Image 1 (cartoon, rainbow, N blue to C red):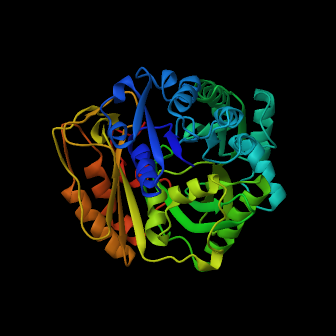
Image 2 (cartoon, helix red, strand yellow):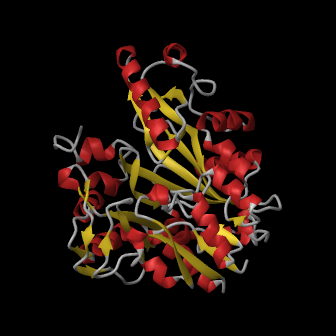
Length: 452
């Protein structure tokens, strides 16, 4: 590969550009009018404006992105995460345009992008799945029958969903119709696809994901787990590896299940297989994300493997350089997502100009960000502005490092969730590893006005 266009913005665009520079690959940044002063436009070798602030007319505008690739002579496109990263049509257009899409094949994205179809595939591979409907539900009557058969509580989920959108928990039949219609509306608005499916609601599980790498020569390895249980409304806030809920036997079992999942799908590139783990250590396949994950740095910290570089090498046709037994894991890593939002006002986004900025540093601390002093955070996109990643020799040391890092962080001019994250990190239950996906709602926001 000679030149990669990054079809994204913010910290992930900066992250990819840095990896490309270290590999001596030229880069092209694309940007909306709102991002003309963004850091990724300054770091890339070239930058092309692809439209107005509205993401549908810029970062989701396939025609403009492909034209930018042609104009700049880019032979590859890296989609990052979000936006078009899991859009099978975009990947197919890249393939048809003789531009290498840095990710899996379009048909694999299509296969795994439909959550109900991917569940059926996992059953064939012998990967445990959450009990649920056989594929998408055709209408309200069938949905109600499926819910009764599975047993309440159930989740109604958008078949093409992701990012925590298009999900409703239903406790009984009287609540069902309203929530069913809401999910269909959300699914249509978010994914232009109103298909839904029903699955058993696993109460208070741990959310554990396995990072995999799969090359185009049939080699697949996993890079261990990440615990993503600290989340609010299905949006992750803190991730760590290894998980306090895992032992070596369960870790190996889930790692092999993730490899099976990738193999049966014909998967290539980096990817993440997501599971729910109940309090009896039973695990269930939830979905497979066909892209780089926001939380990939904690895996990089422990394994010393640059996942973005591996992703690029795989797309270039190179085989993986190591076997499963050669992958080592050292220490404990935690990531906090810093968002420009106000936790005291129901986490309302807080765009605006950064007046003063101090980013933490020191041994074992990594910052992935695209902000700088004087930068104006636009109101049009996701509120995440930085990620603080720490590595300690133990979990206690990692927690101590994260406390220090959060104390050092200064972002004046906008509200952030820094103090809220600090409260989580120092809470006795978090320190003891006593948490699940309900932790924020039941422990951190209990009796507060933020709960709806």
